[in-house]
Length: 273
Image (tube, rainbow, N blue to C red; front, side):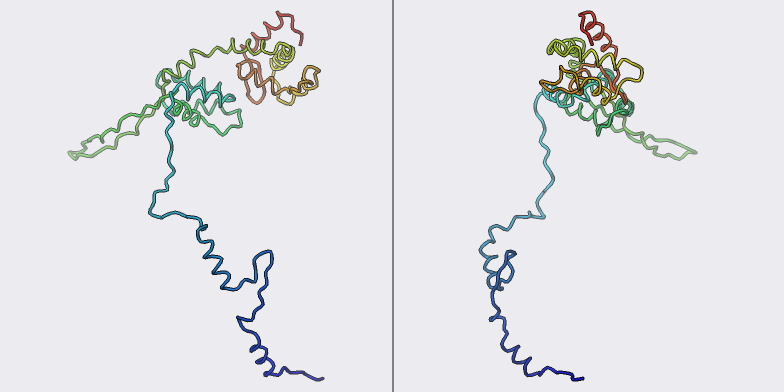
């Protein structure tokens, strides 16, 4: 077997032929093949576009802008934005017409939200009302440690935790006073009288033991001719009834006492479900 060898002189000749200055400049869609000189020149030409990443000595704390609008404006906006949670917000305001311990209000709010898949717990709802100006957070002043004497020796007994309470503000009380769900319900029914049979059918179904799920209500009304043009779905109607306190949600939709009054009024009108 013959073993071929490479002439060392041939390698030296090849190395002499290749130098940094003789490398052929090639480019591709990724910008490869640039010489160092080209790269340095590109950086110099575009140095003004290097993004500013900030000075470590600067204060980069996010600045929170205080909402200086009147409390009644902020509160009205909150209730408009939080329509699905309007009932819970109202219950918290009604609970706090006199100062109530914050822990008890949070617990009550959590119980209200137990059946809802909501990111808002009781404390979060209270915070929304406080920021809107409908609820006031009252914190007790810091108390000095108590001096206790035992066996002739004085000790400092730490003061208890500061108490925190909530109390409905005049703006929040005005919301409670202006809340007229019965008027709101009948106004909603009269706004679209052609859909009264659908409203009645949903109220009657949800008055049955166990209430009804959204799917069951959809099966009940979605194919009705009244809902085809313009197209309406069950959710359109049970959401309106919920906002008017005629329905409540507790794993199923259930007709409230006000909803029962709505049924009676619609049947007296001769509306057929």
